[in-house]
Image (cartoon, rainbow, N blue to C red; front, side, top):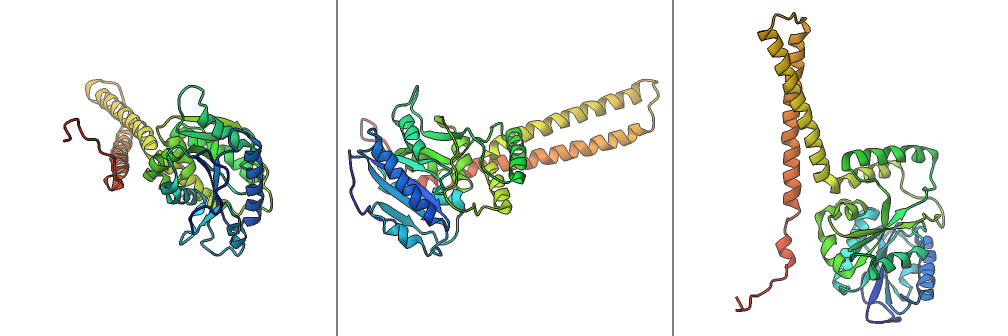
Length: 333
């Protein structure tokens, strides 16, 4: 379980937290851990920071190799009561450790298999420390190379990106590889959208962010355990943080259909009632079809408005219990 780091390490008063989910992949993580230490040791900007490595054992205690990781002096492990998946696992880990982070600490989340390259970590951290224009709450690694995958996955992924762009207005170009401060971990990651999907919530949130181009690395060992069934579920979860945006776009679509149906209905009725122009027998069926379209559009508008309203309500659910800071006036009132 999480605890105090077993060694103090080098310190300038701040800590770099490196958080990864591990699912029956301890051998890959050992290699990642070694390379991260080498990269940070070699960078004078970050070599003086303390380090806390955090592993989320997403096997929920079933991985017999986890004790090998627990023997590392600079690493803490978290074991959830059941498998969370890599997205919710990362959120669980960050939230679990947030109370031990200072506001100025730096936090990096990355996968354990090597596709998030250790040598890119200083680039993300540097963007947090020396922002070009405005301070970024989140720095995201933007993928500039294609994933090594099967032909079927390479064929379906562009289709998914197109559909995602069509319904959300955002291109998918990032994953779990991200950096932010301890203050962001304590605030932004409390948003309920992160309960569904970590990676897409980072781009759905209305906060200052920066994208850093990073090539995708090669997996260290073995093959990914995420099959097509899990990938399809992950794709659906990626849409969930964009519920409001999808609702707005769909509302506009159905409202447009509704208006067109009403206009066409009025035109057909006007021709039939106020002119001598002959209208074929399909006019009645056309009006009936348009009436159905109007009713369906109204029903969808109602459903989407309900979903939209519900999502807005959830975003403030139990927020007061988190202890928002209070400020007293000059008179002490």
